[in-house]
Image 1: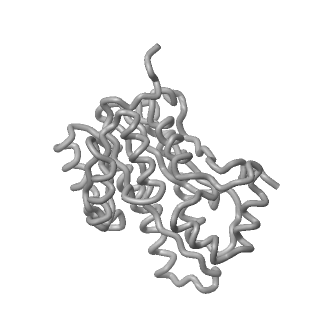
Image 2: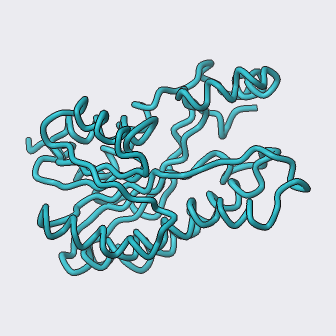
Length: 252
């Protein structure tokens, strides 16, 4: 049988692909046959990531918050690689602060990076995908879009907005061959999350207690879900948000 899970011949653009979950998504998509272009703000981090990933991996320095630069980025990648088959909107920022202490600027910054930038890049890549009548767009959402988590008002608002955007774009574009989905990671062990959890033992204990599988996930758990959603094996899946959380979203 044809390998429906293969990404051979596909080109993937992954924002925030130099570290953390984005890096593992790049690694797993590359292993599945895709060419990958990762973006980020720090060139040295991107260079190191591409050197590690090896053949088939490329980078572009790009700050997703600078939405005016997104059309040029997309145009240049299409000119260089011929197409974009997969877009993974992974780049994002968080802020853990009581709601009363979140300033207007704080809130706007989170929304700009986590939602506005996602919309703009999806729109620009979407134009290309719709013209080709083929493509898969994957948003990295969060458990914060599923239930209330204290001290992340701006972040939760942005990720809830992402899930709304997924459903609207899927409704508009799926009939033209462009699927749009999200992955909602649970508590995943990255360098950043480990630091945050170790600094807040009560939060760590609470998170573990409501995760039925009894352990935190790895970045590659999210990455393989992204490979699936990008592949032809998920050809009839659109407009959904898949939790990759060890059951956290249904735990008690």
